[in-house]
Length: 306
Image 1 (tube, rainbow, N blue to C red):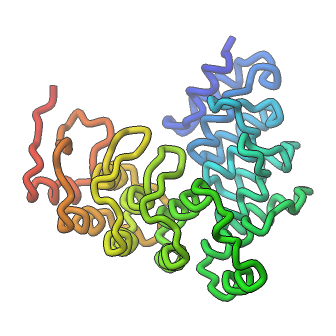
Image 2 (cartoon, one colour):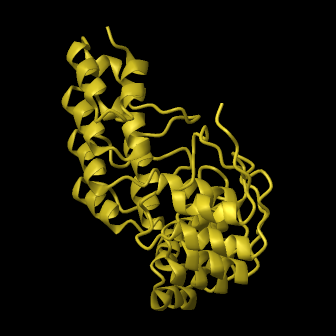
């Protein structure tokens, strides 16, 4: 009989969920089996995979991921940047809207800090409590680049920015960078947010996030404000240029104005090192053809396949 690991691997949906459908058809008791299974489509924002598992009986309140400690399902969906549709499916199938993550924040507070008004509204419709603090609302205003709201909070509480943690500042900067929100980045830098703070799941800087999402204008602004061109992330020990190269091939959808060729060119023009960057047909994370051509023009070597 298919187990949780089998459903988890099939849940990434690389075959249009045909394997997942087949396994669910032969699973004896999905409600008892599925725990990690939901983590796959949640991590990749595959709404159909979540739908199939839930309709087959997966319990979102028995959800577990590989975090230590594991996050509740709705919190994991918000953290992963999932759509309101996917998050709504979890809530409609009884997921606890208030179960906090390991950092103690509720899904609603996290959605607010991320500037995800669509998720915040969905959570409220399903009974979530509004437990946001002043810092959450301040960061949300920053992410909206709402200078009037920011100024209003500063008038009421001038010391608020100084009470933000390094992690809160870094998370907001990375979030704005990966969505290409130039005005939000500029506002936070003007407020004294550190340009090279590391945040996000892989411990990159805002420049890493902007490069990966093809946010060329944000890349330029961050470089103009002193961002470290050769900064290394905490997970892959990679530079912003490396993130831009990978992003050009994976094409994440968080930035509607993405232009990876322009982002890579900006980094190269600023003097980014090409050391460690190679072009190989065996590369599991290849760049886009346009970025590959640009890298070749700048002397990146091509390697023959094995």
